[in-house]
Length: 176
Image (cartoon, rainbow, N blue to C red; front, side, top):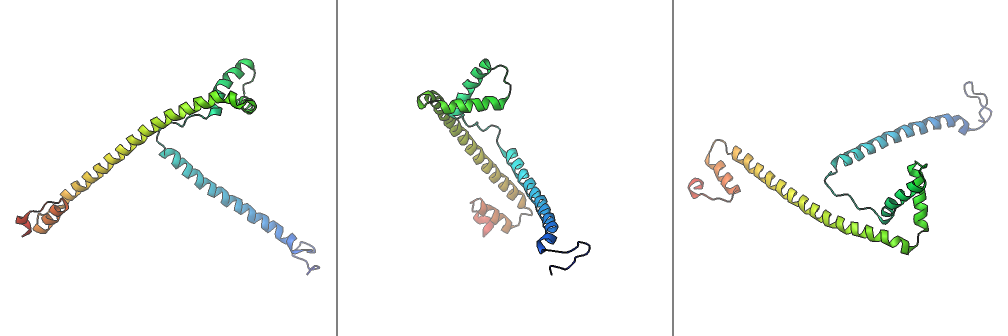
């Protein structure tokens, strides 16, 4: 089949030459499908962002970021012409790497202090969230009983007995 011609293409030397454009089209379709999958992931990320509680305490800064708070101030005083955030971050990273453990220890101590404060605040927040969840459960139980009150309806004896049994009240007069 090496010498065969294919509709205006001339001589076909190999099957792969004919299949290349078709394969490229398939890859293009796959890319489009991949983009569609990514957009569904973005939607779930947006939903996650919407479900976050704005009252939840923020996590404390690590030792490096505590260091960066001080470093930014000194770096801007020494280099007022540098406006880029990336340049300051890069210089801070290099400085942090060059520090010894003894020089890093005050920043680590500050970070540990912030972490302990965060743990205390977070414990209080979690306790508050649990109490709110318990209140919601009680409200839902109340609403169920209110719905059951409405279901009593016509007042026949079997309906009344089932209603009283739900509330752990037995009245012999109606059930006999």
